[in-house]
Length: 330
Image (cartoon, rainbow, N blue to C red; front, top):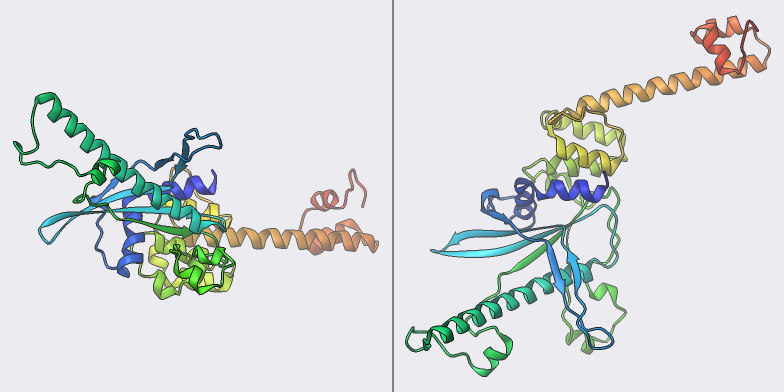
């Protein structure tokens, strides 16, 4: 399966999703609970005008978005959290995330306008007046925008999770994508910052703040190109790495291409054991290749095939196959 499919399925898990934002917003404190999250439709529709003035629908898909609802100071408060998964560096990430957030707010304004229009239509059909029901008559500006003075937007926060094993070298703000140095011009503009989680640019202490299997995913990716440090991390966190959930193991394998093997029906993967078996197999392959190379070199020196087989520790027929001989040639 593709990396984007694997990572999206993984991040959709409510426990992992909550862990991402508990880390980024609250420094690892378990404030957001998985049961407080509700799945949201990840599709947003922009309606820019075409060259001929026609409205052109453009669909934009977030990777994962969830609505957080919690009681705060005696009232229900809501926040929209969005996660963007990147297996490769996206050099226009500030624009991409900014567009998602802007579309979210535009959608909320439109929903508010629809709700108000529906209510006003109901009152007209039933012959009610705003005064009779303690309601209000919208002012000209409210009627024009469809968004009334007392309406409020739900905050939208987007975090990008980079699953790559290299440093993110793409821009992290709109200003970084521009070549503008005039302070007066910049003062008239609003910047947009990418909120990034990238394992290679995190300390181990920061990664340890994750409480879900995202901890093991980030640690493995961070050290995937450094066998010595990876072994150290696996040993130091052996208990957790022996019980990695299947979806997390899928992410580790598809991102790092480490060659970890496990059965498709496994719900929990012993990553430590898988790594040990993989390295054992690598050593065996390395020893076999050395034996093949030695057999060919000795044959080119005119040494008898049987003596070569005895020296490298393999059967005569096997050695003959290596050096391209058949029959009873020695």
